[in-house]
Length: 346
Image (cartoon, rainbow, N blue to C red):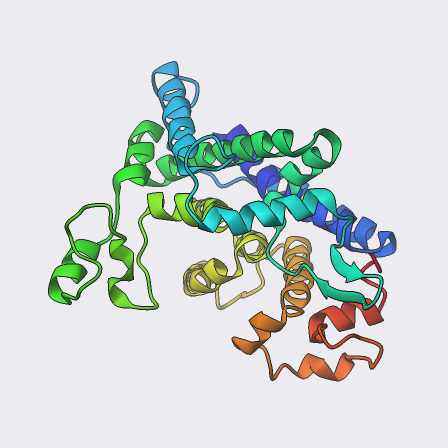
């Protein structure tokens, strides 16, 4: 189980390292990358202690789980090998631009100059996009398919360790488990959705809130769901306080909305582990510091999205750092990073 946990940590850290080298100035990217690698090494040396041994070396579990998760990912449309729902069009566009344009991506025209910048939680696509820059679109899609397959495969073993069961059972649970959308649809009957025909989207019965099944999440928002599942599973496996902060920071980089929902569980876990007579005992400050840096860089990047700011980041005090040289499309976080020389000009 230890080597799979190490692979999981690398899986979460690699896209952020690529982001640093592609978006930040080298004078910033190199020390931040070094700090991330140091924290990663410390995680390797302080893996959670568990008495349960997941049957990873047993082909009776390993091979069927590997094939089943691969089939699930194949049917999701990731990579473009089967039907893709309309949400994939936007995600394909993000991958295409990550391959085609120089990083950081700036959309410009000769007449108007820099007019917009791609600001999105792009981390999930970066390993595939890097391969796409070297070998083209088809290679990038194949890499994205393999990247997603690996992520889902790791989720089954991490959760299998939490629930003390085989990864094959966990794979079946992920595929078929859902909430009580059918009950909500029955109790709050409306024209749509309905229980019949069985191809309707039951998740929208509650309006803007959704309690989506794992399959729905994978088929529609794989770029957020897979890393969020991994982060939650690692935290459930029992990591120390500084380690959970780093894992949460990675989750924020991949899927900021999912990370917000994870905050109460992080706080409860910290409270349970804290010895109030010695509150800083066994707290790894270096790992905690790495998590803070990852969070701050991700936060400043995301808050440069004007649409996101209209959702709740308009009154940030950080706006005082904005400079007049920033374009109207820029916002506080991005302006701060550009003004201090953290972000490369493009």
